[in-house]
Image (cartoon, rainbow, N blue to C red; front, side, top):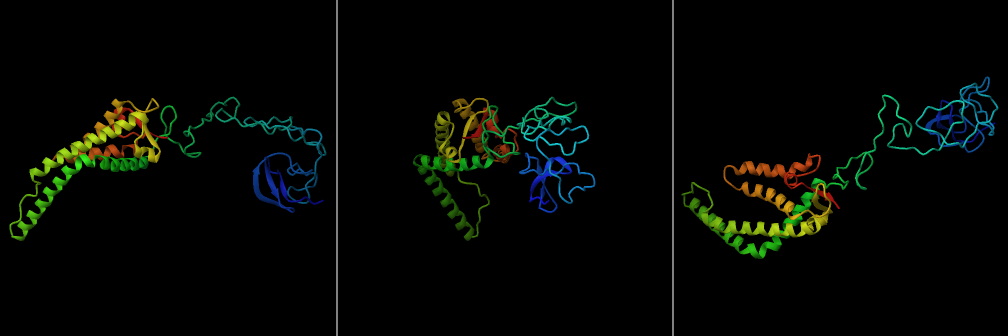
Length: 315
């Protein structure tokens, strides 16, 4: 008698199925999924004189459950279709049970934990972000945190918008500043051409008279921009464009004005202090560290986020 190709009980492992190509067993295996498609149960103990995987498997009848834990009664039917109990040793002498739903997050798939074994602990992957096996950092209430590059792109977009918005207020001062710089460069080149190069390359004091007002006006415009948008929706136009927002770490929703003022003061203050001669190098380094800090921080907070107790989250 010849049996067609298909999946049958593995003669070496009753918990698996093995593919019969019509003449011999292959190496293809899979977890056992139910009864075979016809009466031809592979994997049963061989009849006297029969060798596993050779000749023709002996079909069994289906009527009574096969009794485990005692010598198999050949010719006795094996009962299929009963749900299998996973997570505990198979009880021999009872029909094998199939089809029970697997319970994750409990010791031994719903069974009492065995001494010395660790229970399965489900991982929280955020709300729809990431993929199985990837752990996504979240706020305490489960909102996924923004990645570093999204924050960079949002900062660039907001910087362009603030520059355009503030240009009517700062444009005149910047124009006068660049005029002073241009005149200074022309004088320096003329002196070099005449053979009397200047020994000092410090900018003339007149340049600072125009630069300082321009910078202060720009800071005021930037603060008003962030305060207006963050306290109302938690996101500036740049942050909305990349799908992120600012919130308190422990409280969802737009942050209060005090938190916005704290985070703005930290990163703007570091930038201003970096312009001071001599000690400016130190503050420039601290300003860079502030922006890079979310790359290795487990809460993905920059230093100004830690001061204000805020997080930048995905929306």
